[in-house]
Every structure is written in C-alpha cells, then in structure tokens.
Image: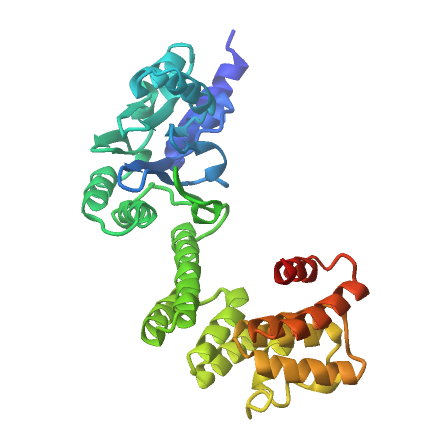
Length: 411
C-alpha cells in the first residue's frame, strides 16, 4: 500500500524543484527557521571593537544572528539559527576555553548542527567557523572564509560573494562599522543571495565605547535593506559630525565647524528630526540663509515640523519666516523654547531682554525665571542670578536645574 504522506512529500519536493525553490526545502519539510543569509564578523584590535553585519531573505535578521559581549567576543549564527551557540559560547570563553572549543562543545551536543553556520571571535581576535554539511545540497554556494581577525560566511549565494566580501574588508578604510558595511555591500553587488534580501543588520560594540557610540542598526523588513542600512549608518556618523561642528564653533574655530557641518548635512539628509539642529548650527556660523533653507525643508517633508518654529524666534524677521513665526500664537512652552535657543547660541543679553518683557506681560513660568537666572550667571552677575533662580524655585519646588545652579553659586 502506498504511503499517502510519502507521496505528498515527494510531490512537494518535485514541485518546488520545478519552480526553482529547492533552496527553501529544508524550511518547508523540517518546519525550521532556515534562512538564506550571509554575514561578516570581525574584530578591530586598535579600537577593541567587535562587529557583525548580516543580511537575509527573512524579517529581522539582527534578532537572532548577532551576539556580542565587549571584552569577551562575538558570535554570528546563520542558516538554522540557534542562540545557544552564543549563550554557551560566552560561558566557555569566560572559563578560558578557545574560540574553537567554545563553538565545538555546543556543536557536539547539537543534533542538527549540519543545518547551521557559526562563526566566532574571542577577545584577542582569534577566529573559528564551521558550515553545516547539509548546506551543500541547497541551491547556491554555502561556505565560509576565515581571514585575519574576521570571518565571512553565507549560504545560497552566488559563488563570487564571499571572496569579494573578504577582499573588500581587507582593503577597506574607515571605522570597523564602515568596513563591515562596505564588505556586505560588496557581496550584494556581485550577486548576493540568489533570491534577494529582506532584512539587514549592523552591530558594533567596543570595550571602551559609551552607550551612544555602540552601533545597533536594523532594517527589519524592506525591499531595499542595504540602502536603508547604509542610510542609518550615515545618520549615526552624521549626528556625531554635527555635534562636533557645534563644538568647534563654541571653541572658536568656525572654519572647522563649517567643514564638519558640510559633511554632516550630506549624511543627515532625510532625517527630518535633525533639521532643527542643522539649522541652529548654520545660524551659529552666520549662515542664516542656509538655516532658513533647512527649516523650510523640514516644513516640506513633515507637516508636524511647525512645532519647531518657536525655537527659531530669533529668525522671526526673515522674509521667508515672518508669516510663519507669529508671537501672538505662542504659549508659555513656545516662549521657553525661544529662550532656550537664545541661550544655546550664547545670546544671553538678548535672552535677558526677552525674558524681562515676557515677565512684564505676565508670560512667566518657573522655567522662564530659571533661564533668566542662568543668563545672569553666564554674564557673571550672581546677585541677579540668585534673585531669579530663587523665584524659579518658589514657582516650582522641583525645578532641579534651578536648585542645582543655586547651590553651585552659593557654594
């Protein structure tokens, strides 16, 4: 008697081979989350950073394939993912075992290791990787390449992908994150995964990195994940350059500030939430027209951008903005924003004049008095500063900024 289930499975196999989808057969038959994926894992000894870049034909690839513990090591697990390789791997590394042993010990107890690809790097940059034996039967190439403090690996790939990724990483310049992304993009340019990509991720963590310098970027579902991931990395470094531009201006180096700002503007294109800060930076280096253009750009891209307009009260008389920035529509929060920007620009005397006018019109608040008191503090008029800071605390016993500055002045 013919086994009906066997016929169904055979039909499934033949049908999917005929359609050219045989590479997904393990997922269909085993009901496992097996994905066509390629990744690069690497270590930067100079910066003491570990990083992984990865892309797949499924959603949120960064969720399960990337595992990094700064100062200890990193693991990339693809194909049929299994986080235990990282969980157990880190435990083994902590006891002093080699990266090869840390991976092999888990592999020995894994009944389906032949469906996995795993790569690891320890705290010194030593590497180890394996590609499961069953992956060679999938359509496309399934391999790994171990280089000097890096590993590239993937499955269901065009043959040129991994060699191109390795070559590109070895010759790339810049930060570890930039080199990882360049390698991933190079692999895609020569064919990538044979049925396309849906998500991508880039994570870089370092022993000495503050939280805001740790990179964790993810494109979870997109028709253009590589383009989106590159844009996110540009945003990361663009914000850093913008902050450095503002710092250079405060330190009295307008030439350097302008150079950094130009680089930041190019990288932050499309991040509307950064446009107010870009406008502020332009205004601070006396590029008023450029500041106005960024404000206009924000208004064009996002109707809610108008909420930022009170912050640019200082530009209220500009022909392009005079009909948009209207004092009669301001509430107290709008005025507080206007005063805060004056302070950020170091225009304390203008702040003092405006704050006193508001108080005379009964448009006052604890924050208005705090900003006024702080302006007098910056102008080294401590008696006036204490007067207004005290008023700020009287109006709001929890105005922590006013309380802290008062203590500092009286100390």
